[in-house]
Image 1 (cartoon, one colour):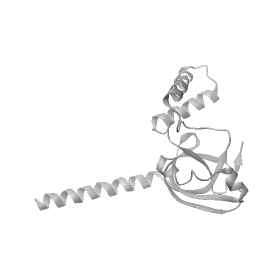
Image 2 (cartoon, rainbow, N blue to C red):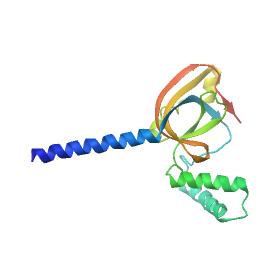
Image 3 (cartoon, rainbow, N blue to C red):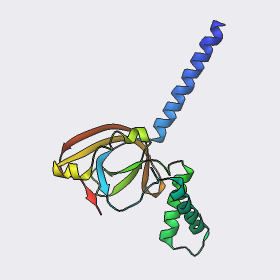
Image 4 (cartoon, rainbow, N blue to C red):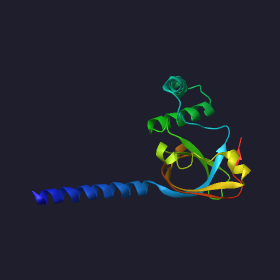
Length: 164
């Protein structure tokens, strides 16, 4: 009986280790700064289904209409991709990766989002501060990052990047 119990524990540990290794291989450590975009792409985080469902019905119509413009089709594919990956209702923020001047949308779960939700553009600007981030995530098609973990959050002196 003890042998079966030990074999069960060992096999469980092996499965856990392999699954964690697989997660690490699928993701990268990315560094950058918290950035703000006043108008841009969004998710339906905190939005009731009564609002998101009609929007997604419209997205379905665009996806099925061969005469849709390239912009409409790209937006439809983006939202369908988020929906397919279970990210449509998750919180997000923007990041400037490295020394880039191009923002990427970072989608995280609610627990990870709590690590950065306190930072507001007005406060950062008023105090001449910015937020440096280190995250574990996977670069996805259509320019967003599926973030598994916010590793570090450091408030430092400097100008916070934002755009309209």
